[in-house]
Image 1 (spheres, helix red, strand yellow):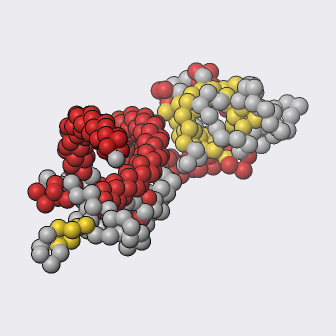
Image 2 (tube, helix red, strand yellow):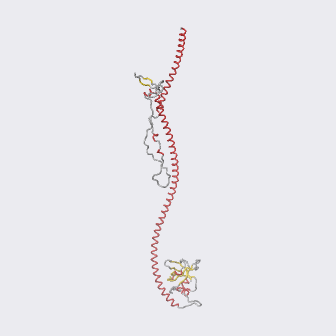
Image 3 (cartoon, helix red, strand yellow):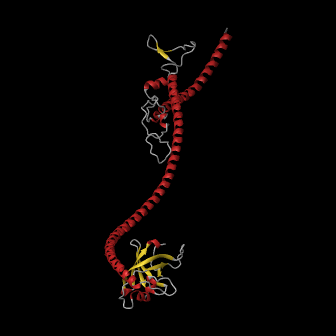
Length: 380
């Protein structure tokens, strides 16, 4: 019996030594665990402050201006095609300064230290709650436990991570839309530079045309003034022509009287070996060039003939006092090509300016082959 007691005492002493050794070792670990737990608790509360406490609230989508995606043409468009980008844009992801989670209250700090779920007994003391699934152990989940706060933080962190990923997706869409917008903007600027160059060129052309218009207006003003002067000259010339025509008519009447007298004097005078002579042969002698045209009025059908001195002497005498016969002569133009050669027309003398060798003659239009011109030759 004494031996058994001795063995038991030795065993107890050994176990006591082991227990003392473990107590000493665990005491050092206890300090480590306490400090680590406090550090983890403090850092967990700080991390919780970086997590949004709730989802951003739904907000009314602002009425952003949609991008015009219709092609640029010269045609005006009241309702161009618009980009649907803003229809799916997650505007609420832009909500700033959302409240974060805060675990700094005494109640929540105390809850962070409750590993087991507790409840009050009949005496008002805290007692551990059995696990409903496994009654052999105590419950570590549920209201009032550290696990509840950890689950809440994890849930909010998970949702915030989802929101962050949505934001990344929206950023990619915004980047793509921005890239397309920049390309369109650059193209518009490039086209705008080309259009501006075209506008500058057109403005230069317009300025040049305006200057040309001003020059033309000045010319028109000068021509209008010249036209007025010419109209006055035409009116004066018309009046002179009317006076001259009256004189010509008067002279024609006198010439007819003179022609009748000359024909009476001429009688049946002949040139030997020829038919009865004409008035031209009788007064101008041998055929040939007798003068040239120095003035033409194609409207009134008369010309002014500059006769040679010999022809004028033959026509009205050396003293220029003989009546002028109304003879007919021919007009030709050297080098003129027509069916009748150089022949232009016949003219009939009507009035003479004796001291200047000038004769006014009618154009016989029945003989006319072409318009009479100055310097045409008069002959018979």
